[in-house]
Amino acid sequence: MLRRGDETESHVVDDAQLIARSREVPEVFAELYDRHAARLFRYVARRLGDQAAEDVIAETFLAAFRRRDRYDLSRPDARPWLYGIAVKVIGKHRRSELRMLRALARIGADAAGDGEAERSDERMAAAAIRCELAAALAQLRPENRDVLLLVAWAELSYEEISQALEIPIGTVRSRLARARRQIREALADAD
Image (cartoon, rainbow, N blue to C red; front, side):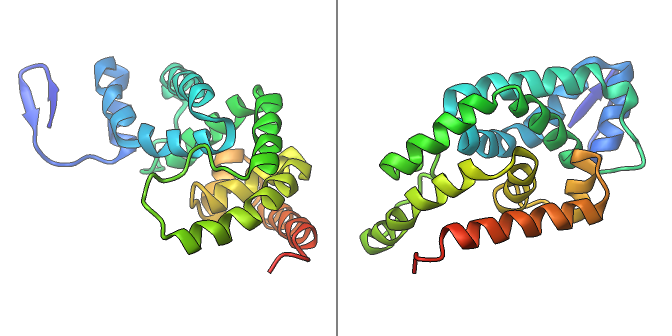
């Protein structure tokens, strides 16, 4: 439920309506954080670890709040916009991401796993390939890694990635194809 002055609205509004309303009532922007921060945090934590993810999420939402007047209100879902900002902030933390991937390549542990209990045989199979996958991800060009991880971890569509990174869909496809090819080649010996 959103409050604006004395009037109360009980219907659900999309992200664009929320952002538009936050231009007049800045406190309303907190609802956008509530809707998207947890999922964004999981994505960033997988790339940088929990501690850095907290900083990145804070920077992402601060930047989003400051840029909310420029948000394209014809887009009802703000996720691509928020992921785009997060990817730019992650770019400032590239060395942290590479350190994280190299550490994963050495030890094979997923520092930001889902927390769901896995069966031991599934864990063993995943651990066997996790090291090689992390090493392969570390070898990707940053722009290719961004596209691949937005598909794999953020579960964004090509169109959403195009919006997030402000690149044509054809560029999304070619970067993803290159990233997938490099990962396949790096993992060619893995079962």
